[in-house]
Image 1 (cartoon, rainbow, N blue to C red):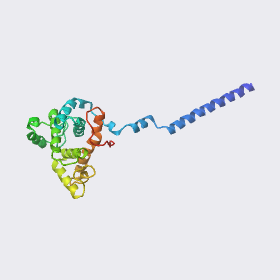
Image 2 (spheres, rainbow, N blue to C red):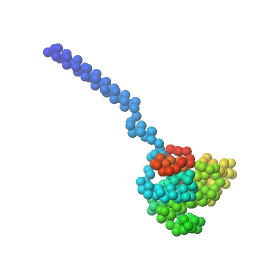
Image 3 (cartoon, rainbow, N blue to C red):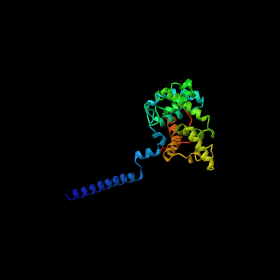
Image 4 (spheres, helix red, strand yellow):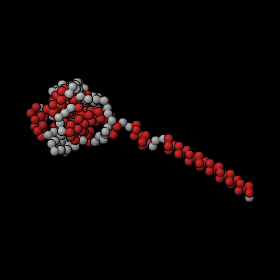
Length: 237
């Protein structure tokens, strides 16, 4: 009887040590290793978190066709897709207090561009998705032809700034940059720093090209859209 009790005590002691060992292992692992979700998040590029609407694919062929027709074979359809994403998130019925449709043309700009490109934009219908894509691409090119900037990232940033706020305001910003001693042909770190706009308008206008060129274009290329990024990638805000 005594031997049986002694054996039980030994067995219980061994089982207790084994249980303690497992507890220590679990504690060490919990402290020393990050959770799988946190680890995965730290390895995922922020640009990949951009949610690209599935229905954007129905406009892809039109964007590729118009972008190449206007800017040539080296064009980046992903850049125009990024611009449409920023403007309306691909909502053909999108409407703001001043703008309408997929590319968010104001009624005044829609009427004006119909006179500049009568063959392609003569109908002046910003609610029509084909018209919106066709004329947004041509408006970008029209602006680019009137902007003196360093080719590439800075040039496209100025084009987009003008699309968002008007060429007249961009020219005022360029003049202000020159007076401030900044390079009037460079957007980032120069022209973007000076403006006579209202604070809210400046914030919107500065974030517009930055988000399109450093985040959204990269996201669309990663999703399989044709194009080569014109600016370095930044983390999504």
